[in-house]
Every structure is written in C-alpha cells, then in structure tokens.
Amino acid sequence: MRTLDRLVVGSFMKLFVVVSLAVPPLFILGDFTERLDQYLDRGLSRTEIALSYLYKMPEYLQYAFPIAALVATIFTIHSMTRHHEIVAAKAGGISFHRIMAPLVVLGVLLTGVALGLSEVVPRGNRIAAQIQRAEGPSRTWRSDFVYRSEDGLSWQVTRLTASDGRMTGVVLERPPSAESPGTHVTAEAANWTEGEGWTLAQGYMRTLLPDSTERAVQFERMTMPEMKERPEDLLEVPREPEEMTYAEIARLAAILERTGGDATEWLVRRGQLLSVPVATLIIILFGAPLATSSKRGGTAFGIGISLLTVIVFTMMLKFAGAMGEAGAISPWSAAWMPNIFFFGAALLLLARVRT
Image (tube, rainbow, N blue to C red; front, side):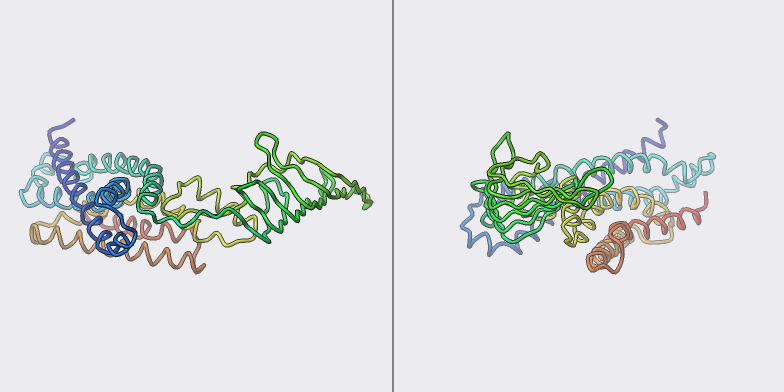
C-alpha cells in the first residue's frame, strides 16, 4: 500500500469509528425520550431498559454507517484539499480518482459489514422487544380464512387452534391440470401430529378426472402428504418488519401474494434491507468529489453538507417508501430511489472533478 493510500485510509477510518460510536447514543436518547412513559407504565427496571438497548445496538450501528461514511469522506478529502495534499498528488501524476480508490474499497467492505448486520439486527430487535415487554399476547387461533400453499393447494378453514393443532370445517381444493386430476376434499376436522402431519377426519374426497367424470370416496380418517404446513404457519401473525430477516420477509410476502393479500409493504421493506447498507458505498462516492473545493469553509462546511445530505437522504427514503406502500411506484423503485438519485449525482460530481 502506498503512503498516500495509508494516509487516506487512516484518516477515513479514524473519523468513521468516532462517528459510528457517537451516533448510536443519539438514537438511543431520542428513542428513550419518546418511550419513557411506556417503560414507566410497564414497570421496567433500569437494567432491563439498558439491556434492551444493548440488543438494539446493531440496528443503530447499521443506521450510523452511511452517516459515518459521509462525515469521514467529506472531512478526509476536504482536509487534504485545504492542505494542498491533493494538489501535490496530482503534480506527481496521481489523479483524484486514484486518490479516492481506497475509499471505494473501504465502501465495498463496509457495505458487506452492513449487509451482515441486516441479518443480526432482526434477532436483536426480537430479544429487545421481549425485554421491553412490547409484544402483545400470542395469537393461538384463527377463523374463517383461506390459505394457498406453495404447491397450489388451497385451504378453506372455519377455525384453527394452534395450541392443540386442530382445524374444523376444512375444505381443500386443487384445480385439474394436464399432469394431474383435480382434487376436492371436505372434512369435519383435522388434527396435527408431530412427525405425521395433518390427519383429516369424517369427510369426502372427490377426484375430478380429465374426462370430466368424478370419483368420490368417503373416509373416516385420511392423511394428505401435500398438507405440509404446521399450525403455526397458518396463523399468519407476522412480527414487526424490523424483527424479520430478508428470508422471513420474502416468505411472508409470498404467502400473502398466494392468499390474495397485499404484500406491497413487505416487498418495500425487503428491498430496503439491501438498499440501506448499499447506501454506505454510494454516500462515499457522492461525498468525495463534493469536498474537493478549498474555497469553502472548513469544519462548518463539512458539518453542514453532511447534515444536509443525511436529511435529504432520510426524507427521500421515507417518501419513496410511503409511495411504494401506497402503490404509486413499484416496491423496487421505492427501496432504491434514494440510492439511484445519489448515485447519479455522484457520477455527475465525479465527472466534473479535475483529475
């Protein structure tokens, strides 16, 4: 690694670590102030409150990454500009794009770390919610619902109680296809047994053959291998979005789409789980050329441009998310619009920098 690269990396990482450690307490203070009345009503002790915020720390660190990356980039490049280090590097034949190359590498690495935190954050938030006693009573039953499994089997259930693994008023349907006949099953009840699955009781099974004829069979007890879902899977009681991983949100969205529900909110959230970490790299690309002018103020300029960028990015993220949830734009556009905007701005700024 060249001496210049070590200078850039060292200056950036010092600022990044300081800001990353300084931002989470601000989030904690704001959240604590907002929820203090709730904590007092629930009778939480100081230890419980502190422990819950400890488990939420990965989430606050993830939010701090783009902010810290922006501040570190702007102050690193602007300081080098004011002290004519960039001019000296250019005189030695090193372009500005080469100077910021270590920042791009660091941005890629930090984006990877932020993506890793995306899998840690939901688990920490679940534990924090349990400690804060924010979870309502667990739902153990569901009535009059329709469910569609991944293999196309439609369920109509009058009542499900997950505590004893029992359903009543069960109707199962599978439309006929070129590969298999259609199936229509009615049963008075069904019981779940671990290792065996669902056992239907007191019903009829009708098979719709390709020649439009029908074959009906009455049964007292019958099992269907296609009924793979556990009672808990049929409850459809999702956690809060911030308590779910990418895979869990994708699975829930697929279930909602199969059963005719609206999965838009969850698709937006799934996209944001990727777009927010990637913003760390994009913010670095945006901030570096923005800080190359020596005519602007020093610390005041750095703080001002950092705050303005963070405010604009946050507003765009919330605005685009709201538009996506309302169906005005696609979930993909809602999740990635702020990144696309800042990436486009970064390319324009990089193109205008004298190299």
